[in-house]
Structures are given as C-alpha cells and as structure tokens.
Image (cartoon, rainbow, N blue to C red; front, side, top):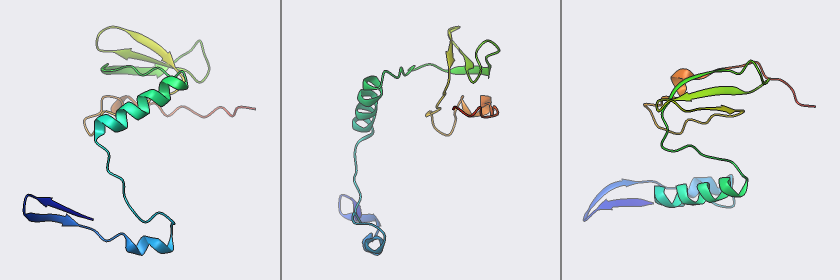
Length: 107
C-alpha cells in the first residue's frame, strides 16, 4: 500500500506478512460517508434508531427499568436506552458521562 501527495510518497505499508494469519491480506478504503450510509441502512433494517446530531449532556441508570439508561440531550430531549454508543470522536460527550452498570445476565 502506498499513499502519494501528487508526486511525493507520504506513507507505505507492506501487508504481505499477514498472509500467514489470514486469507485476506489486503485493505479496503471507503470514504466515511459510504461507511456511514452502509451502517445507517443496516441499523434501520435492524430497527435500531440513531439520534443524530444530538449532544449528550447526561446519563444515569433508569430506576424504572432494570438495565436501561436515561439519556438527556443538550436540546432538552431525553430517551430511555439499553445501549448508548458514543461515536463522536476524541472530544466525545458520551465517554465522560459513561455508566458502568453491573451486568444483569439474561437467561
């Protein structure tokens, strides 16, 4: 793999050592908008709602529903969720509000 800026080599990497570990020693590059589109479509197919572009300003365990989390947003809205995924980068508003609730085994 090699990336160039017009004529200058920026970076290169050799993936051939991976041949001993996988049948697929290569890489795939997709623009972020393509990756997001594929992910959004699959989440919709699974009936999973994504709240965008909402900014989380608080999370707490939901006393009314075991295993649920109350999530409040900067715009005043709130939701009850079983899972909250922060995919908002290094300045995440989700990570500092993360809850590590004890897991309840499902039987």
